[in-house]
Image 1 (cartoon, rainbow, N blue to C red):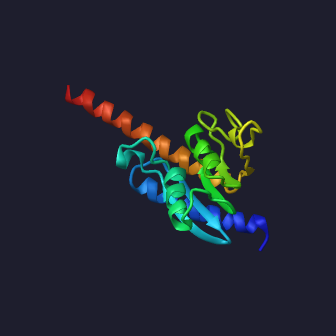
Image 2: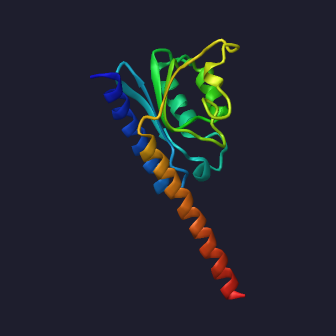
Length: 166
């Protein structure tokens, strides 16, 4: 199986995780960590559910992967994530020594892999990652756009309802 087919297959699993987040009312972001062709960890955003700022999909997947391999070093793994990692997640990726990151959609407001900063490819750090972007980007971007549109529509409806009560 070629890399493109493999990347699509594992990104599809990350999308499944994102759908789980969406079902919980969370921002639909999912992550999967793969080692030797096998999924060793998967997660989705839980920030609203847990009311904990660090429960991003990538971070909880990294935690689970560390437990799975019995080490903080996640060498020989690939992280698949539906949205470009933020600065916190990019830092955790570097610290855990993940050698390859595949993400779907860019995050122009918070992405720190390509959009705002290039943290995973900054030679000043003691680790750099091979990065592939754009795998199933349209599907992931649409999922996020639809989620935020629905959220805005819901807030507008709530404001209208409040005005009608007054």
